[in-house]
Every structure is written in C-alpha cells, then in structure tokens.
Length: 296
Ligand SMILES: NC(=O)c1ccc[n+]([C@@H]2O[C@H](COP(=O)([O-])OP(=O)(O)OC[C@H]3O[C@@H](n4cnc5c(N)ncnc54)[C@H](OP(=O)(O)O)[C@@H]3O)[C@@H](O)[C@H]2O)c1
Image 1 (cartoon, rainbow, N blue to C red):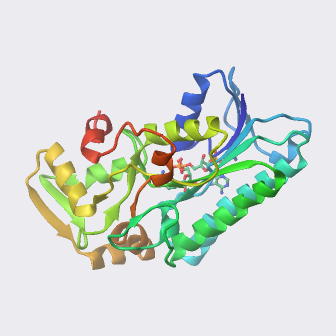
Image 2 (cartoon, protein in one colour):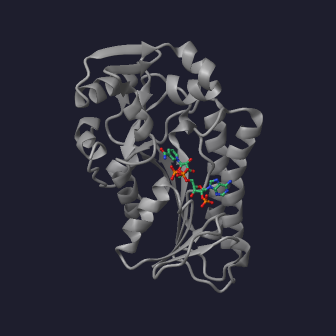
C-alpha cells in the first residue's frame, strides 16, 4: 500500500506512521521542513504540486494543522489556524483531481470542537452543533474535505477528541494539573472531556482504511468521557494526592482568553457511536483503564 500523509511529522501522524511501517506500507510525508531524510519506507516532500500525475497512492491521510493550543486566539492566530487546515486540504483535493489514478480512500482530520458547547448531552455523529470558533473552523475544514467525494473517493472524517499518550500531546499538561501535593480542576469542573488514547486513534484509522464499506464522519473518542472534576479525581488518585482545589474560570480566561472558554471551561460529551456500531473495539474504554499506559 502507498499512502500520502500531511501532518505526518506530528504527534498523531508520527505514531500512525510507526504503525503503518510495520505492515510494509510505503509512506510519503508532506512537510514544510527540509530537515527530514528519506528512509526505506518513508519519503518526505515539500510541494504537493511537484507530484507527477501518474503517481499512484492508495490513500491520503490529512492531519496537517497549526497547534490549537500554542498561543492566544487573537485574529491573526485564528487566521493561521484556519488557513493551515483549509489550504492543505484544498491542495490535497487539487492533487487528487490531477492524479490519473485517484486514491481509493481519504481520512481527513476534524475535531469534536465541531459540536460546540453542549452541556451534558451525549453527542453521537448526528448531534446538533453549537456556534463558536472551533465549530466554525471544523465545519469549514470538513466542507473542504467533502470535495474529495465528487472525485469518486471514499472519505472518512475523523472527529478527534483530546488525544492522550504517555509522551507528548495533552497528557503533559494534564499531569501538571496535579503538582506540589494539590490536584486542580477548572471552573465548575462539570465540563466534559472527551479523551482518547493515541493507540486507539491509530487503530481506528487503520480500521477505517481497511474497511471499504465505511465512509462519513466518525467520532474518535473513548466510549467513556470524563468530567473535568472526574479527571482531577483520577489523576489525583494515581499521583496519590488528596488535596484538591478549583482554578476559577475567570483566572483561566484572563490567562488564555477565548481559548480557555472553548477548550478548557466548556466541553462536550462525545461518544464514538459509528465506530462501535461498525465493530471497532477500543483498547482503552475508560480513563482508569488507560492511566497505567499513560503514566508508563
Ligand atoms: N492531538 C489532539 O489531541 C487533537 C485533537 C483534535 C484534533 N486534532 C487534529 O489532528 C491533527 C494532528 O494533530 P497532532 O496533535 O498530531 O498535531 P501536531 O503534533 O501539532 O502536528 C501538526 C502537523 O501539522 C503540520 N502543520 C502545522 N502547521 C502547518 C501549516 N501551517 N501548514 C501545513 N502543515 C502544518 C506539521 O507538519 P510540519 O511542521 O512537518 O510541516 C505537523 O506535522 C491536527 O490538525 C489537529 O488539529 C488533534
């Protein structure tokens, strides 16, 4: 199998490539960096436009995007967050249109932020959506990805939850919420965190690549989301800390602005209904099951 990946140098893409390399897959990684060197299975490219039209790929995997948490969401940053996703997706669609042999499948990232803030409702893929910056960003990103479909290409949209692994990603910050003998939760602590272990993300991607009957949007989240307070309890138990305090919401808003409100103080309780109905089995269904691996 030959796969083209955008975002292949990142936290999720790197783990996916490791997984695919174990199955004799040949991988082309689109990156802005010029400091990567080709290996037996992996080649790097800086311009999608230079790919000859008789090149054959079986699949595209589209993960590229500027980090949502790397800086305050001022207007300039928001424009970068949008452009890094829309422009890359648009360039991939243009490549697919140009190639004589189209990829059979595209997996294109999105996020559970598409649902907006919805309190305690359990959100499957057909749930309603509330407005907000993350919602508008994901909606525009998914709209762009849907342009693969008129080309006759099977499309799976990955609505990713907060991806956790023992190194990198959000787990680094989460571990720091329990420090100096005190565990902390944010604001009311009632907001939901729809997390997922990275191993389940890459396994779900492999599952969707292989099963030709699958298409449309998939929530990539563990079956059991936790509240922020529940998360604090689990981490405190793990780190044997018994003093727990709330960080007031206004402090978070002062420090991080709109990002704090959308990503930390509000949340969504997302369930992976379509993946489970398709027969996908999660290795880590609850946070308690995942914590030993996340602390290893
Ligand atoms: N991790 C999560 O918890 C999570 C949750 C929901 C959604 N997602 C989405 O899933 C995708 C992958 O997440 P990740 O955690 O692996 O991200 P990451 O570690 O931050 O990696 C992002 C990747 O995107 C590429 N990229 C960054 N800015 C770009 C730009 N301006 N133009 C083109 N490419 C750019 C980078 O490639 P180069 O630097 O090599 O060019 C890098 O490989 C992201 O789009 C993210 O929004 C992630």
